[in-house]
Amino acid sequence: MKREQVYKIVEQVPEGKVITYKRIAEKLNCKCYQLIGQIMAKNPYAPKVPCHRVVKSNGEVGGFNGKIENKEKIRLLEKEGVKIENGKIIDFKKICF
Image (cartoon, rainbow, N blue to C red; front, side):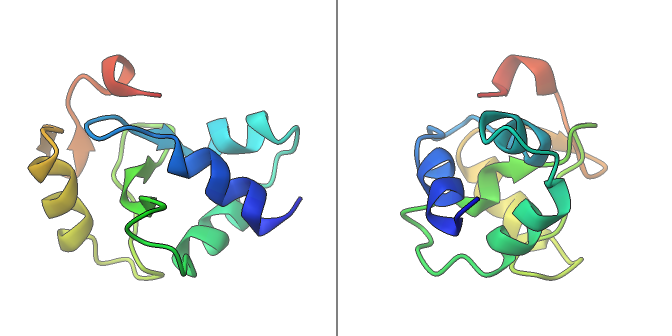
């Protein structure tokens, strides 16, 4: 798996939608969820590759920019119309890409 493959998938996620680390891995035929998280943490193409739209499979927002702190990620998602409560996305399944 190449970083560019991950970035290409994430680049396709439209505003107001999210994708999970697991779904990206499935699209790449692997189970390398943590590696995808590490790749997103070092994303040199933001905001063109919107890494803030990559979230956990349980609907939690997760970290951002390689940090556990995610206030900026939440702010960006909410700006796009994603509703979040207590660190979890409301209507998670409806907005998954």
